[in-house]
Amino acid sequence: MAKISTQTINGKAFEYALLNEFLERLSQLTQVSVLKNEPYKTAEKCFLSFEEKEQGNYKLVASFAVNFLIDIEPRLSNGINNEDVLQLEIVSDKMGQSGDVRDVLAIRSIQKWEIGISAKNNHRAVKHSRLSNDIDFGLKWLDIPCSENYFSEIKPIFEKLAKLRTESKATQKWDTLGDYHSSVYIPVLDAFRKELLRLDNDNIGIVAKRLIEYLIGRQDFYKVIKGKNKVEIQAYNLHGTLNLPFENIKPKAKIQKLKLPNRLIEVVYQENSKTTLLVTLNEGWQISFRIHSASSRIEPSLKFDINLVSSPHSLFSNQLFISK
Image (cartoon, rainbow, N blue to C red; front, side, top):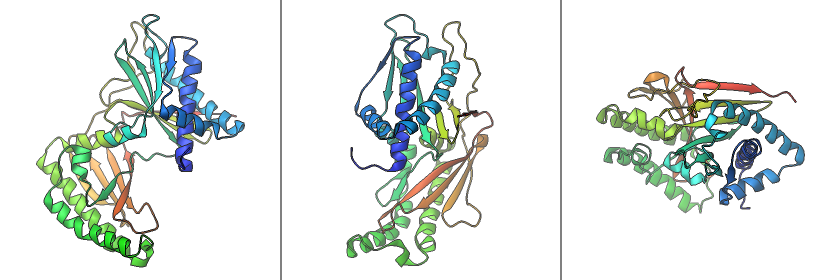
């Protein structure tokens, strides 16, 4: 297995544990198949890299989440007939780049139905997107290209970073630049802020909605967050495809549809911060964008750690506490 970070190994092990718990619980109730693709094999290796005790912990947390999801998604356990097979699969990470944040899918082709789960192990970040000279965030995130003005503002900064990297043969570190928060981060954030507001102003009612869809996900999904002795389940029911009944069998809990925003209210720096912008939208959405260098060595790109600060009151969230 290629070298991957501890956080990634933990996340993939949790994906495998969730899929396996679905398989164990649902194969007693309905026809189930598992697509053993490359992402599945990778996740399985990550899970098997843990000792038995830790595997047991993953299984326990996953079983709590799966039991709850079966209660609120009747179509998981109910097929029309024997041909109505529930297919379980783990999704390639590449899908996340196109706005699909789901890690585990449960699909019923005959019913033209599927639900997806975003599996998180002890972290809540929604995206880790980059900014650089050749990344058009407007086009990539919102399907609306950035202006020439934006690129002319950021170009000198990233070109200088590229020159320093080349001249030092990729050895020079960020701390040699002194207060690089002021000299690099702030000008890039200012250009990003200005461009985001311009895009919203020129495309009324479109940008706010597309920003949330890019960051949260263009498909409805459940986010399952594994914590210490607990698991939290959030339902991002943006398009109304979650929590559907099966014939006369209704879900055991009701999940409201979330309202997408249609307006950007403000983009401001977080108090006493040179690295974080707070983006406030209507309908109760607020997102933080913290810019940082992904490496201690200078490189001509910067990374965003993007988090959901607040969401609509109608966001369904349930915490299940696990006693061992």
